Length: 593
Image (tube, rainbow, N blue to C red; front, side, top):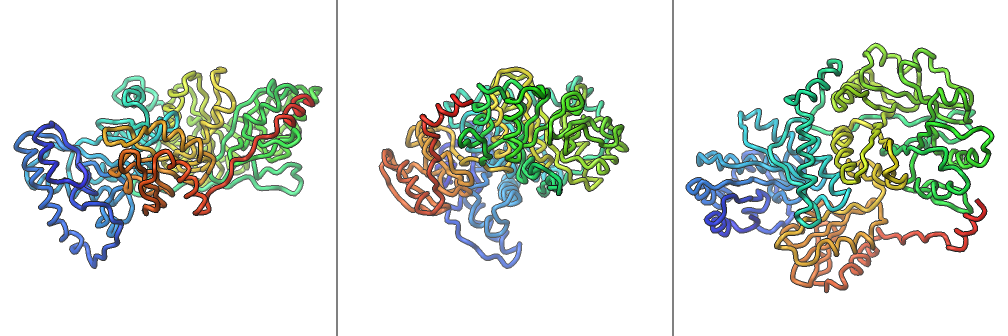
């Protein structure tokens, strides 16, 4: 229930469970006004009007044995809470706790909590703080998990997996909902799959317990009351370097892509450049906003294959790192490559590089003794690829690795190496979000390498999926961020069709966040973090928002997408889509290749 305490009692007469939003149950329409409180007692004193509106519903639910969900949403905190706690996870928790206090004052306990947000990191921290607060108070009310307004497709599934999967891995959560801008029946499969993945990781599962206890013991010292991303130092340029190594990794999160020698043949190389996200001019590749930072090349074209090696060199010339196993480079040297060794081999070789290699990358499997980790600084690797070995809990092995590195004040970038034989795109999104997103959302990790062990996915798809993971974890923003609600009975337009139109028109604007809301209930609050909002208000009519302010009202739905584009232009955040190369020039390049 939003805005209507009286109506909520009528609903309780008819239904077995009711959800109330503490942010707008009694506070009316969202006003975003600042309130000044001299002390905490001043803030608490204003609870009286909340109790007056809420306790009659509590009494009715108790007498009728109805259930209740106290569902706080990050985007719809009351102006009272915002003024005292700010737009924070702590504010979400305190908002829910004071409503729970009122329930308990009436000896009513048949309720659950939720702490939803469209930002998975905020959602995770909110639930963790609430779980910690329940421990402190001696409470044990169930938690319902969800990432609200997650969107659609793989992005929506990945966002949900990042938030829900992270918490389930911590043992937090009793029920879950995956909220997608799709027909409701499509929400069940990813929701059920996340529950299955979580169940497979529970320590009560004998196989999971075996994997967890196979990881050498460590102390998990994460601070759940705050978020801080680990510090990592990018590769530094040396005087004698012939390529720019500073581009091998990215400060906001790196994407490394696995490729094969066959992709560098004359008939394939131009397609490879595009699949890697490069711009091209006269057949030459250049990095763009979502270009792979480095490549993993397990075998190198023969030194006599001049054309393939030229294709590699052109990527190196635009600061793309080429990572090759050291044993391959010993047999088939490649100039200016990054030599990849296990930590044990690197220590045994004292960090000596094969012929032609200019930097070292090391692989860690999570089982190495702590004493071996102490050798890492003397090796001076440019990066660490973290890939837990078979037979270990991936989550535990990775957390152990990061705890050891933190104790050493090690600032070498760590890339999550995710090798997989998954052949379904939805499953890939869920597994990535759960197994890698759960670390990135804790600030643990500096990038992702997805290495498919089958040919189920194209290079382009794997690359864009990697960037989607980083953006979902609030690291590297390479495309427009969309916040869109799931379809429900309040929606005043075809949400899926409209969202698709808006994505097509505005999806090329990295750094811009656009909210697509089907009705005014989910509008001003849930899109509070968005730059622009598209909100249904009446049948066939749309309001457009800039931030929290409605700036264009009652636009005809047929004109609203164009109106949104014009609004983005008015605020200086628009850029035209880059034109594809002329078809004639493209044909010439292919012929020349």
